[in-house]
Image (cartoon, rainbow, N blue to C red; front, side, top):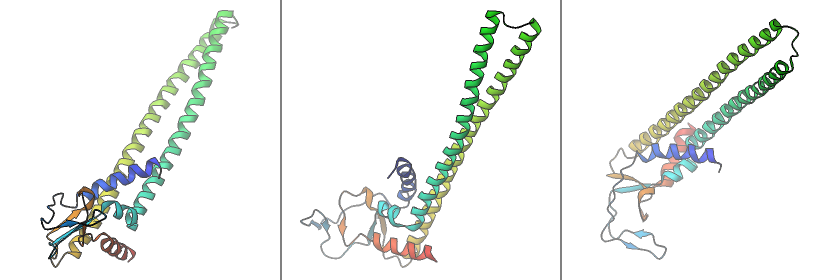
Length: 208
């Protein structure tokens, strides 16, 4: 997984975490199995656990959102990099012209004062143009950054709304009093994890 994917999925995960209650008291009558997983004793509590990481990895909407955001980011970087390289090339040419002008002045190579002043004026105008282009480049950089952040916020909100609405729909009968984010629990409790069921339901609904 590359750096951009990690950034995207971290942002989406932050939105999903907010959907779940972050408090959990393990059944005092529970015991741990040989593999360290907590097993509930007696009747299960009206609590469910959902893994955010698994939703991000297997919920089609989350996967597509991550891919889309990554693609948009890469396209923006290509656009910005192209303009930055063009500016750098133009600036290097300008620097060479300035050095050439200084050498000609020192060598007395200009046939007249007017010719030297004309070349100096041209270089000054070019410098102003480059300063304007540099500002435009910085504005573009900021614009692309803001657009990327807006896309992040929109996709995070979309994913959060989708998961939240499904959990409400799934729990319309009130079978669960709490639906917790498994990422914040020290131990998983056998019988409480409904992640697979939630992912299957989310993908089935999204496919429609």
